[in-house]
Amino acid sequence: MSQIGEKPAEISIDEFRSRQNRLLSQLRPDDLLVICPNVESNRSNDVHYPYRSSSDMLYLSGWKDPESIMTAHHDGESWVVTLFVQPKDTLKEIWEGRREGVEGALNGWPIDSAHSIEDLSTIFSEMVSKANRVLVRSGINTAVDVMVKDAIERRDRARQQFGNGPISIEDPSAKIAELRLRKSDAEIAQMRHVSQISSLAHEISMRHSAVGRKEYQLQSVIEGFFSYAGTSGWAYPSIVGCGENATILHYTVNDDTCEDGDIILIDAGAEYNGYAADITRSWPINGKFTEAQKEIYQLVLDAQLAAIDECRVGRPYNAPHEAARRVLAEGLIELGVITQSLDDALCMENGQLKKWYMHNTGHWIGLDVHDVGIYKPNGEPRLLEEGMCLTVEPGLYFGAWRPDVECPKRYADIGMRIEDDILVTSKGPDVLTKDCPKTISDLESLIGKDFE
Ligand code: GLY
Ligand code: MN
Ligand code: MN
Image 1 (spheres, rainbow, N blue to C red):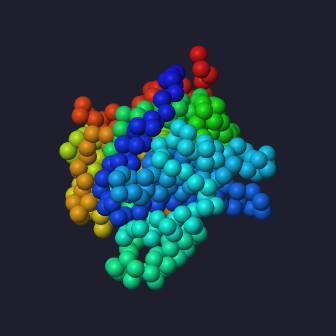
Image 2 (image 1 turned 90 degrees about the vertical axis):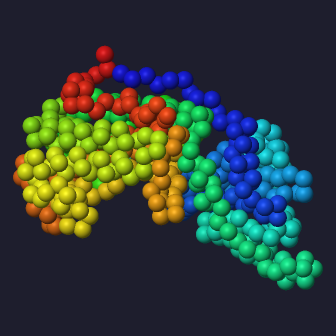
Image 3 (image 1 turned 90 degrees about the horizontal axis):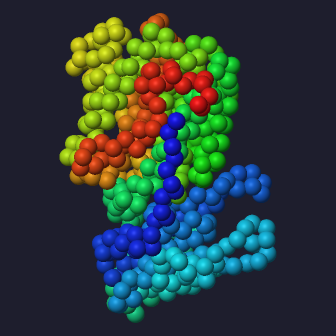
């Protein structure tokens, strides 16, 4: 059984400040930066979805509460980072929970000033009146969009006083994404922690596996452990599919019964301090791979190991994908599933590989499970650098239910994906999720077995 290490240290104030400085150093003193997180979303009647702030807000301030906006403006001497927050309100706090308020925000957060969100419009208008460019991501918070537009219009109406034309709006997301792409030591510690917890959660569900289990029962032991271990829960809705459900890439119904002979595919990861893990494992629910299941599983595993080996400094971001595709195509030719030459099988237009392997081999991971960062800056594949984190997740899906292909009988309804999260280091790939069992012998030794 793997162990979960100590909780990592919180991200320090100094680190948040250094993130802010790296962004602000790219701006001009007459810029106004506005970080505007998601608004709370209604679920039904008076119930909201659990609030999760946007990752850019978490990255730059660590501030998690709803109804908050961060700004940065230059006062002529230095940048001033301001947080607008929900004010203290005893009645609201009695019903909805404690609030930090303006005083709390000023005490121990990486900011220079704080105001009530109720004063946003007035103060914001004043800030815009001094800016020549507003950096804000529009389309997230309608109230802020309207306020920015109004403030700019007011400013434009008075432009004769300022002596210059209308001010521009730009999206700062790409600049922030570029920073988020390279993880610091403190971020890696969070990701290692959530990876360990998620790995152990998968192991628990392997041990809980048995013919007759409901998919939602396996889901519940995984997600229950996410909570038990102190995470904020899942980083994305868990995919728990047995039998033919395992061949549906984003299956989330999770209400079927696991039958003897089924493969169960579980794609689930927790979120800790905003950081995601993303793990997929596939195993026979009865604890023993059939020969046909072994053939496919070992092929996917070989493809995954070849892809992980490409997660090295200086390699193009898509090298893992190309490595995985090649191994899968070679293997399927050997198994008689693909009847084309290797080159033809790999062809994106008519190649047979994409019938059984139809997704990419990975994505950046960090504060978002599908994390930000341009894959092809200037049209060229990005080269991997130390500190980048990506998933490696090849799979094969033989859905006998599909009308668009003739599924090989031997592999009917086998769906398998193996997914780990990789940190690129100068010493080579560091598999953050390495504690999650994945060899055939390791899986067979623990499926359905209690912890010793
Ligand atoms: N869990 C979604 C993905 O693997 O990308
Ligand atoms: Mn993934
Ligand atoms: Mn996944």
